[in-house]
Image (cartoon, rainbow, N blue to C red; front, top):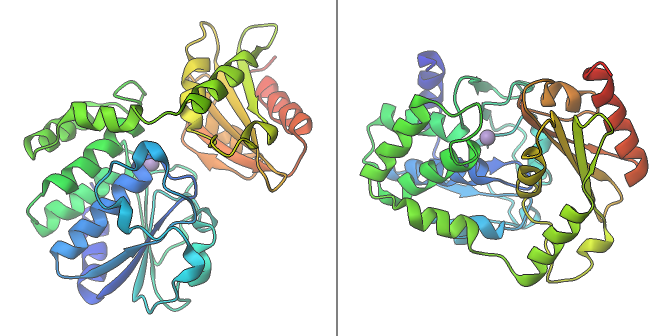
Length: 324
Ligand SMILES: [Mn+2]
């Protein structure tokens, strides 16, 4: 753990009073887990903080304590924040419209673990060795010796569990298990977290999963799998895009597949591509070619292209990287 970064972040916390906390669009368990845990920590220190995100609350994360206080409409909040925390964001634009309400003169504290992080903050605490951004928030809480509440522990635990793919990805370590165990000691009930993460689907969600699974294609050599969600799929108002990780999870289970890609058409006419690899090629290097980023085995990008064109460009790049 980088003690210098811990001290400079702690100094910024001591110096300021009112914080804006934001995280990336389409937030995942680490984005919300680390943001909520940070808010609880700041409040325990007698500070004030708002979490503002440019996304609706994903239903698989709605069980997290404090999600009802998150501000989901960034345009509504013009407040005098003293400093801005950006959590789990590889680049500043990942916070979307929240950029507009962040005061220009307020220092940005960038806390992250993405290898593609662009170091956009006044403080850049980027640690590639942790399994989740939440691990850094926990280190901060330990630095301040705050009493760890159950709600804080639930947020850290959920971030670790989701970011390690329920302790299955390559970032799973002795430490990730130790932190999880410690959080259980502080009152987390693992079965309640799992229930919250999983038991939230509607019938139309499952039908969308069936559709996306039905569209899986695999290259002739069996190394690359992909599928798509079209804008039409999401026209049913009861259907929400869902967690792309869930679709990728199924594709990754195909024997012999090194890279899996999910393409999702957005209502804005762009295509979001999410990649997962087994380490044979770097997902973040792949996505960097298209202006995206992420981790070595999980990354994403947004393309201004038709679905077909986006597929061709990304799949060609995968083919070249695999040397085929
Ligand atoms: Mn993360």
